[in-house]
Length: 350
Ligand code: SAH
Ligand code: SF4
Image (cartoon, rainbow, N blue to C red):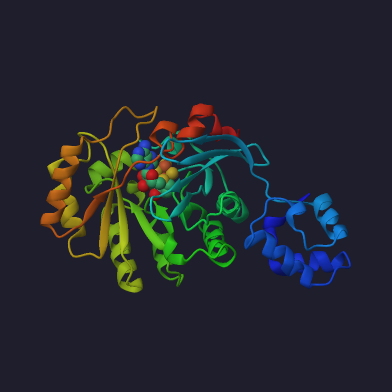
């Protein structure tokens, strides 16, 4: 069985003409897949019966198998998927009060970056996802929304894994989100822990996709203790690459800051961050820490976050607190999976 979502229109055309069907049938199938977003061959009502049974016999509509699905009180849906080789990954769908429907998707099974506060980092790295495995997570939510009369509008590559460690596949998936699902580049965000060569490369891609950098600390000493990657690319190199990116693309960067009580929410860190970002086209997104099993710290109290934001304002740096979604269902990065699998188990290949 082959995954239909893996084929380009050209490959699909070759397939159906190989079965003796006229080429326009491929366009019809394509439109059922990506415009009407149906979830069965039976729904492709304008196809001849023969072609439908051929498709049914030889093709699948996706390979991701839902292991668990949880729906939070705020409407956030979180899914744990099993890949054909048994690996587990997560995706989240977040409905907002405006018409936005945002899918948060994974780019790797596990992650090699080892950020201490992150549930995925605590699991270790299993493997890269293929472009189709990345794309399909958004596709499956798009399909479900379509059934409910809604449309997937935004995608963030902020699930499990480091997108820039799996650069080519992440970029290929991004192109499919734009080309096949019609999601505008400005409605796609890729988030990186700060892999400097890839940030430079991304600035040259000529896509309008948004870039987010997981900063979380404004001094090397503090950042190394949270994000081991900072040993390889310290803040000076990271900030050089970020400034270069902004100059080259004219686009604003979002810096992510998981606010950890008593750790990176201090006046010292706020002043250091203000100095680091002063004058740059950017915005700081503060996300109160989602507690995870392997890291015994909590989210910053609200008044500390308020003071932090006020200090940044002194430097002309804007910051907002992002609402935490799906708290009651562990919708934080890697958390659903860690409830199913114990840390360390994944590294050997689940
Ligand atoms: N690997 C990429 C993208 C996936 S993580 C990256 O690190 O940017 C998406 C975001 O969630 C990152 O900003 C990450 O630092 C943050 N994150 C991870 N664990 C978290 C936690 N326990 N609480 C709050 N934010 C967390
Ligand atoms: Fe990997 Fe991102 Fe988690 Fe760090 S925060 S371990 S880079 S997924």
